[in-house]
Amino acid sequence: MQYTQIGTTKKSHGVHGELKVDIDEAYEDAFLDADRIFLELRGTMQPFFIESIRGQADLIVQFDDVRTPEAARLLQIRGIFLPTEELPEIIESELDGPEYGRIAGYRMIDVQIGEIGTIREVLEMPQQELAAIDYQGREILVPLNPQFVQKVDDGAKQVLVNLPDGLLAL
View (tube, helix red, strand yellow):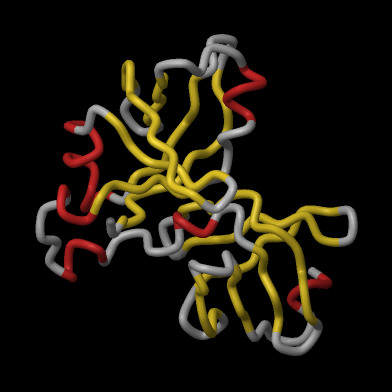
């Protein structure tokens, strides 16, 4: 079966095992209509049945069988998938919105200096998206744009970048 990533789990929320999720706008209707989604755990796609979804800007989902913050934390920063055949045909222009939201949890590697760190969160700003990364004991924000991002490898969960000199020192 083929799967398509439609979003990403974010942080756990509350004391009942809920999770914040970020769903690509083009797939939001499919997500809201789904009775279950798939998360990749230990190299295999695992189904998680949706009990409820709430929220406006940040969607918060409650899965059946996930009832504690500890259980929800194990599902943080993972791709959310649906079987490709269950998704509507998406016109490429519908995907022109945020394009990097799915890379939270990926490792960022610079072509010059090597591994920078794991992308903790992707922040959506009016001008562009930024990757929040803990680097050498402090948070840095790396602009995500075609000038810097060389390649996104979804299989290896890596983002290859070529950052300008001095950006990591800011």
